[in-house]
Amino acid sequence: MSWAVEEWKGLSPRVLQKIHELESQVDKLKKERQQRQFQLEYLKVALQKQKQKVENEKNEAATLKRKNRSLMELCDNLETAKQKISNDLQVKETQVNIQSGQLNSSKKIIERLEQELKR
Image (cartoon, rainbow, N blue to C red):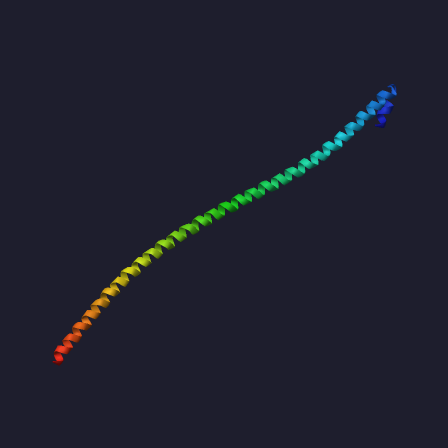
């Protein structure tokens, strides 16, 4: 600093040299501090972006979990309906088989009666 030389004229050259070194060190430390401050700001922004990204991922995961749960419930409902329809089909097949047996029996009776009538 040029003003320091004027201000401190009475000091020895060694002391002035030390002052100059200290001032250089202060300038260097200020620049370093400023650089670290920029790095800190950059890291804060990056951290905030990462936090937002994590939050978005959490929200998406929660949405997917809800959709998954809903789909699982739908699958369960469809499976229940399928079982009910399958049971209904078995009951109706049984009824058809019974009625088919009755029809065959009736046909035999009719054939026998027709043969008796022909005699």
